[in-house]
Amino acid sequence: MKTSEPYPKIKCMAAGFLSAASLFISFDTKDPYESHIGDPLRRGLFKVFEYTTDAFSGRAFVITVLAIAFFFIFSEVFGEKRRLGAVSHEGRLAAFFSVMYVGGRAFRQADSLKVLVSPLFNLLKAFIIFFGFYYLFKLFIRLVVYLMNNSDKVFVIKTDRFLRIRSFYHKHPFWSVFLVIYGLWIPHLILRYPAALGSDDWNQLQFYFGQLPYSSWQPIFHTWLIGSFTNMGITLFNSANAGLFIFRVVESASMALVLAFTLYEMYKWKTALWFRLFTMVLYCFTPYFTGNAAWVIKDYPHMIGYIIWTICIIEVVTLKDLKFGFKKNFWLFVAWNYGAVLMILCRKNGLYIYVAVSFILAIIWLIRLVGKNREKFSFYILAALVLPLAISGMVEHAITVRYNVVPGPIREAFCLPFQQTARYVKEHYEELTDEELEVLQATFDWRYFPTSYDPICADDIKSLYLDEDTSNLVPYFKLWIRQFFKHPMSYIEATWNQNYFIFMPDYDNVVYNQDCYEGRTVATDEFQEWINIHVPKAMQGFPIMVSSMYRMLNQLPFIAIMNNLAIYVYVVFILRRLMQDNKFHAGRLALLPIWLSLAFVLMSPLIDTQPRYGWAVIYILPTIVALYMNMILRRKGTAE
Image (cartoon, rainbow, N blue to C red; front, side, top):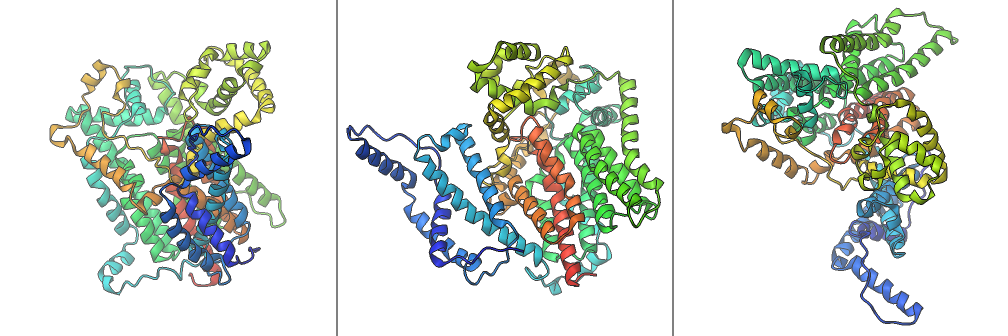
């Protein structure tokens, strides 16, 4: 493993200053007052002095203190002592993170990378921010690498004072954890009674009860699921509230069971106690988990299936040495199918993710069938790969026939290219040829592109797509490719601008639907009155109070970090590099569900105010990290 040379003290001092300054500098550079200086050189120096004054105004003392602190930290980590080990290509990784962060700061300021050079003084600011965060990211990488590679040595926790708890935990390593997780979630479910809803959920209820045509615009199985529970509440208790609450109780209990099983896997792997406790705190207290437990949204059951399926991938691909032991372990076979089917049925991208991973696994299987050490053909492997597709297809067909489901708009699948085209048209309208205009007119109500284009959300642009004739997509995508080669930066900026949030550790992108009233404006007044989903008078005030608590927690140190998608994305990249260094190739396969989830974040309508698109990263990553730690411990010979 290649590592960088130790930093001399002068470099540590410079890194300390840049890192401290980068935390306070912004690209909001105001023009100085009119100086009436005629000489260009003297006027230029005057502007530089004024820009610098504005950049550091009132921050000199804090930056000095932080610079000194960072100097001592960097001296310990990067200096001659070098107390923390490195990972290969850590400099490139830190530079990548820093580039993404600087770009994110630019987009946050002006929705464009042009702010980096306008005014020209911002280039100096970009330099400071880039190198300042470069060293901070290197420090973060070193800390993560140290924790992962030395999990058995750091944070050693003595349990002598908790003998009864330890004894109960060892006797019931699964159920004890489940009871704690779910016990701490129950108050959140009660205080947000009957459930938190969104506009998608209200539309699905209208689909199910016939207020609107039953459409595949939303996953039809999930529509049937929440509609059936709601209908059960109306039938048995004359209350839609009761049906929704029962649905939340069942669904959140299912998630608690799944998360408890991830901790049970860590227990079996002899994962360090500190990391198990950290994961337990994550599940029990951070708003990403407690706040989502009360939300009726298609992503939640999708994520339950996603986690189950990922655990199966770990078992089959990694711990079973790619031998797929389905016949020997029937329950693994059942869990694979259940998780995959639930994942596919509850979100449309679940199907594509499953097919992509299964295709890779099928190739590995075929190589083993024809390789030197040929394995026997296994019907169980073929059945495991095919059955989820067959089962989910039959379920959707049955619902489609029963409720006369109509096809949903296909525009949802093309959010990213539509956004890129809209930005291209907005920035390069004068260059459009008559042929290009003809294609655009046949595909979109494109006249509204300049006013409808929102750099962080594709919803307005995709609504301009003309669904009547899908044959227009072929000439459109030919045009899309040609325009990319004309102005690739328009496409890059459109993609980056919409998704920069996933690399911003200082951006609060956590949103909670407060109660059942969220999103109800999409429902007619008649439907709202008939279904009567409401917060009881005795419960009024509790949902807003709890949601306020979530927002407060997300501003607190440490909790905010654990509740930030960017931190998890950084760890994924670091973990991938560590697995490469340690030749843990099977572990890299286990990361596929996370990589594919991130790919779909890029193709989704937005990630700002909709962090649910990135849930897979946060919900799955702790288990993958524990898997890597287990591999390191086994190689050290300290794990059973």
